[in-house]
Length: 160
Image 1 (cartoon, rainbow, N blue to C red):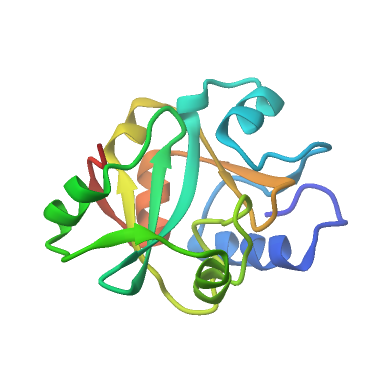
Image 2 (spheres, helix red, strand yellow):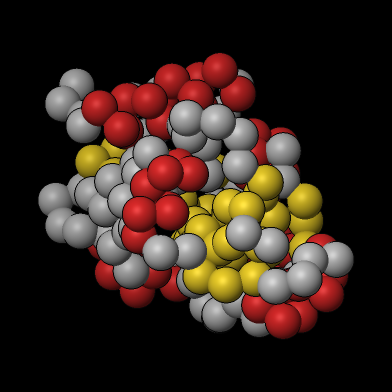
């Protein structure tokens, strides 16, 4: 599941999780940071909407990973209603790291210390190939919508 041999430890954990999930894509290191969806799309030569952003929120004070298209923002009030949650707020950097073991800008959909409730934005189904972070702002992997939902055990929901 790894392209190249010199991946950071966090990315190796993601590659192992991808292998365990039977994912087809391989983790690859990029020369420049892909901390934003726009930067990732430019580095990969794809539409920004094909970037599967990993955003961590706190839903009723429990971590919630939202895999959303890079082409739009998450409507937290709408998402709270759709998930029957009281409140959803953006997680603080230390909450992101505690929940995922990864830093903002490189959060992968898998490879976390413990399972995290996950939502996969239904609009990601519009793209044949998706790209997701692989544990650092410099690593990514390709996937598709069905595989992303399956590997995360996520719930498909429109998030905006």
